[in-house]
Image (cartoon, rainbow, N blue to C red):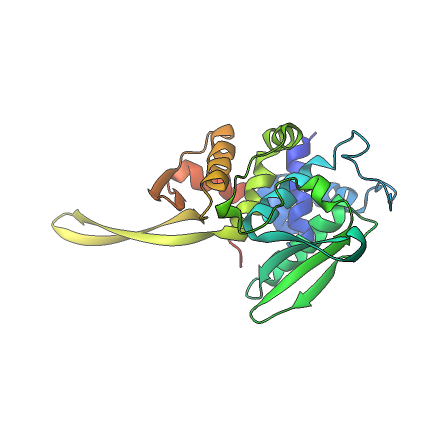
Length: 249
């Protein structure tokens, strides 16, 4: 049996286009199990129901993922008749992440179509709904780093339950996995060593604090080389992040 965290990570990888064989080798579930998860029963769409207005909660793994994407590269904008557009800006260099953002947005509210709007160098993944502000009470005027960003209690509970998916959203938006190098003297000779590390950059101290909190929940060590940049470089931390994030490309 696999817990809901593994299932959520696997479904996110499937929606991003990763092969079942690759996911099976990385996470453990067989390909038949992955197919069952992929093709399993889905909740019927509820075109007008808002889970927050109904004293319910959105689907936790997908919402935690989408919340990370929203805090990284997302915004809400108001249109006519009280309809809001949720937009996630995705770099065209990473088509896998565009597919993943569209998939997770649809999973949170499946009765609303998800559109892809091409811009110069990036694609906006967009969905229209009157109740998006209910799901993202952090919405407000101006850039996120110029206002307070705090999670509601129900949001904190979801992130605490699925910190992996929240971090996947954050790092896929404003983070990266890079190769660093260092030199060391061995036997009188200078040798170069390469090692991977994860970086997360954000101008909002509040969003940075949420990233730190989620990493702490998983026991992943981090450091702050700059006030707006976080680094995970220790081998065990990188290995943990590789299990549910991995390179963007």
